[in-house]
Length: 115
Length: 113
Image 1 (cartoon, rainbow over the protein chains, first blue to last red):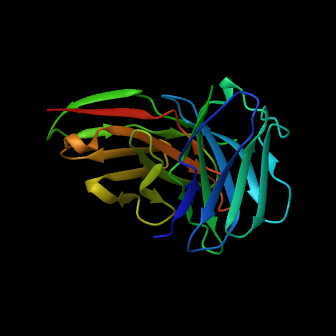
Image 2: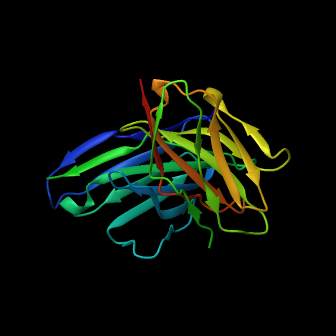
């Protein structure tokens, strides 16, 4: 089946720094990618919908200036957590929808720890 | 907006016993329903999905689910669980091919030897 790759899988950073997480569809083109956030022992909460070549659509309560999303190509979307703080520590998961048949595939997730 | 309710946050079950994980969704004209499994510190793996057709859906690892429109349910079942089935299970719904999935809060399945 199709593969979605996230990188890095784990990242530790200091408070105040920015962190970029990449989400790549390895063997298919994805016009739409979704970014989710998951706190420990909780469900996935949608942060934003990323469409190739256009601005991301953010869910209510998600700061667009803090969580920068770029979907520059049909195989890559990036999430940048700017000026990270400890409360941004979380598990971030992307999913990509295959162009055409609409099948949705998930990445393995990226665990961010802000010290 | 769509919503999903997973009634049980935790389900302990003995090995080789049957299990049912419950999922109810808010009604809509059309729905696509999914069950995912998540092992610790990993992403999501699709167990099965209902898009249309037969209401009984068979998935990987011996799991199956039944779409019940009148009860707006999509319960997940397995006739005999293994220790390796211990994980978090998420039910999810969307009502079109272009909208994101909405997830339930998850059910922690613990299989006891």
